[in-house]
Image (cartoon, rainbow, N blue to C red; front, side):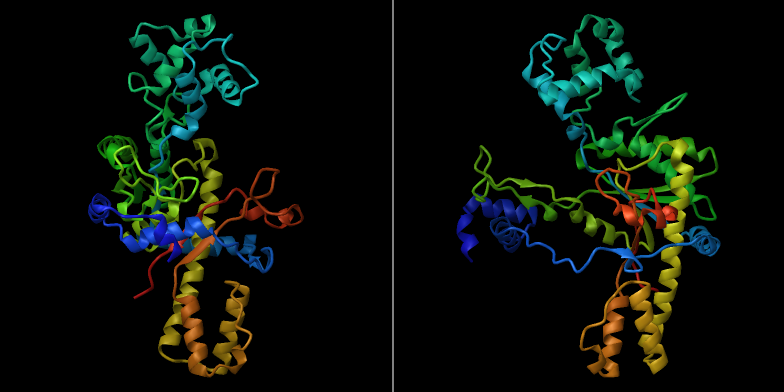
Amino acid sequence: MACEKKIKLIEHDIKQLLKSNIPERKIIEQMLLFNQGVPFIKLISPATISNGIKIINTREESIIFEAFETAKTDGRISKFVPASGAATRMFKSLIKVYNTLDKINDKTLDFKYFDHSEVAFFLASIHKFAFFNDLKKNLAGQGHDIERLLTQGEYREILKAVLTKEGLGYAKLPKGLVKFHRYYKCSKTPFEEHLTEAAEYCRDENGVARIHFTIPDDYRTIIEEHCKNAGSIVKKQGIQFDISFSIQKDTTRTIAVNLENKAFRTSSDSLLFRPGGHGALLENLNDLQGDIIFLKNIDNLAPGVRKKATNKYKVILGGFLIKLQDQIFEYLDRLEKNQISDEFEAELEVFCASDIFISLPDDFNDYNKEKKSAFFFSQLNRPIRVCGIVENQGASGGRSEEHTSDIQSLRRNSYAVFCLKKKN
């Protein structure tokens, strides 16, 4: 392979690879990908109503709610939250200014620079942040009054208290530990909000809500203790949490390269590996061996006042998946028993086309019954993902405007629900 010449393994590289359990073959595949690029996806057509998008009408909602409630009380529902990310990107402008300016005040902040404008906006809005009271208390412990610092323009002390380990340590803290939402009597972190949300739609008949977080290994003890304390507060309401954690696997890491697509080496001449994206967490997801799993990022959550509406649509998506799953399991059972009649074949064709939007091969009519059965089984016997559609309101994402009036019942949803195991 041409790309093999781009990475020359020396003795301590091999030892490093053996220790990390990353196969040399995988490294070569990654280098090839960097060198050749990712090919564009060949799109057939945009997803539209009845062609990739299905509308759930009001008449179906009661049936869907009932199906979801049954699955929930049976303990089939759980939640998976990727929570490995650090808050670094959230505070990158503050970090850059803090690391480059010895004095940070109204004179040194130049609005023609984006990072400086971001810092100015942060300081102007600082009283609104959910972590403001913690910041105020931390500064007071160091002998500073935050209002005086703001009035006199001594901003460096404020940024220091936000970013460094002497203060709140938000520059390196996992995103899930940064207080996101401010309420009348308290503020909550994303971990706390996800537990509260899981209690609403994952709770079984015994009051147990199951939730799994992927977390950074360095903060495991802190996060586990934080979630334990948060869970004990909600437990007073008769809810118990089955909380589990996992770490993104080292074997999913990606080799870092320079601008010439050659392996990047550290000052000690070792290969540098970086954590893979969210796709790398599919192994963690699969390890759960769960049935119906709600997948939602650590920072993708609504405050309490909006939870009622968002939870309603989660239940709709979950209930729809369950009804779809029941139908698919029935078809798989019949296919396994080789119950292929002309009528059943026609029913499967309609189901694939109208319910899960799978097109038949052009030469499908030339298949014999055994080959048709194998085709249908391969299409149905796999994980199911149900996603809601975000109404286009001018932001990136969502759908084209001409279809938004048809999807009011599915708006505000941008998450997926996975069904991960076949019925026994």
